[in-house]
Image (cartoon, rainbow, N blue to C red; front, side, top):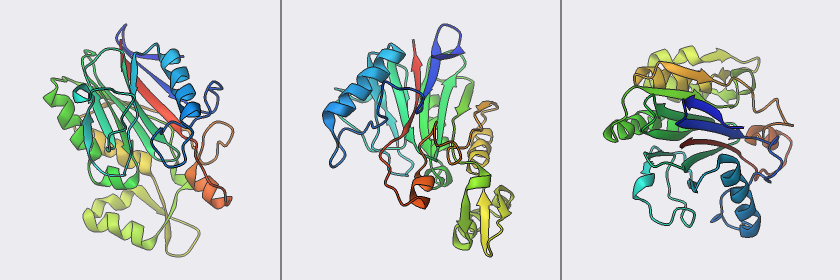
Length: 244
């Protein structure tokens, strides 16, 4: 069911494997995609949200923000970007993840919403800052956020080079890492890194869903878990936000 963020105005829903009306594949213009299957999935999502349209992005782990209100024929395009913003009623913004952090943003007056895909690359490249800047251009006032389910620190082991890339960018980023039991490896807290980016951008009202996608196979797809099991992964969590 929809969860209310602004009374009678802004709502969100996270569609995980417990939503049985979808096969959890959403990118229509991907190679070898089954368009009929994806159409059925999107129709089920639209019905659950009572939405007119939904914007699905071609996510590239970059820092490009899409202004959904400038796009014609939404549903027939998948613009390349990792975040989107809208002030349009009944247009759902959606983020696909399978370990990365989905972030849903809204102004507390309910006029503008945003959504971002925060993998480590896009988070490090300031997708959050870019999205909040776009929301303020659209006259958002005080902005609040929901951080959705993602891989948690206890499941996210990274190597020395990964750690060094972060620390070289800013030395105090080391606080998001703890040593792993494996030599020259660390456990990275991506959700807290994303939360820090939000706070640094002036977002202080944050709802954080701290469920671990990696350790919850019946509820969430996980790219890292699938790789460790030697399996391919097509499914995604779909995190959505909408103005009514």
